[in-house]
Length: 169
Image 1: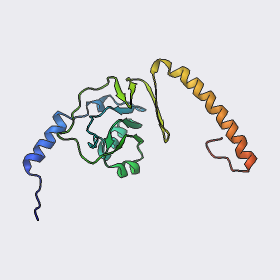
Image 2 (image 1 turned 180 degrees about the horizontal axis):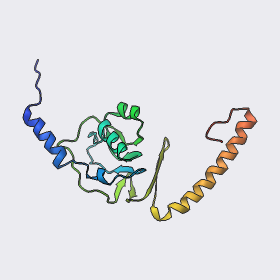
Image 3 (image 1 turned 135 degrees about the vertical axis):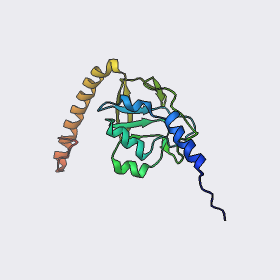
Image 4 (image 1 turned 90 degrees about the vertical axis):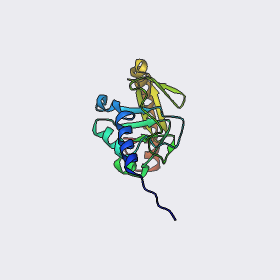
C-alpha cells in the first residue's frame, strides 16, 4: 500500500488560490435578507459551496443560496439550517477548478435570467425568480391566491375535523 499526503507546496498553493482567485468578493456587499445566487461552472462535481462558506455568508446577512451546480458538506449545511437550493450534491473542493469571474451581474440559473435585485422565492417545491420591476404586482396576485387557498383548505380541514395547522391559519 501507499499513503501519499499533500506536501507543503500544495498547502501554500491552496491558500494562495483561495486568496487570489476564489476570494468570494461578494461577501462585502451581502446585506441582511440577501439570497446568494451562483451560476457555477459546468463541471458539476465541484462543491463550490460548503458548510464553512455558506455559514459565513449567513453571518453576513444572507438568508439562503441558489445554485445551478453542486454543493458539498450537505449534511452539515442541513444542520446549520441555511436554506440551499442546488442541482445536486458534489464532492470536490474548488482549488484549481473554478474562480470568481464576476460579482453582482445577471446570471442564468436553470434557464432563468436572474438579475441583481430580483426577488427570489424558494421552498420545497423549487425556486421562483420575479424581476424587480414587476415584483410588487406579482406579490399582490400571489397574496390573493394564497388567501383563497388557505380559506378553501381551512374549510376542508374543519369539515374533516382536522386540527388547524400554520398553513391554514
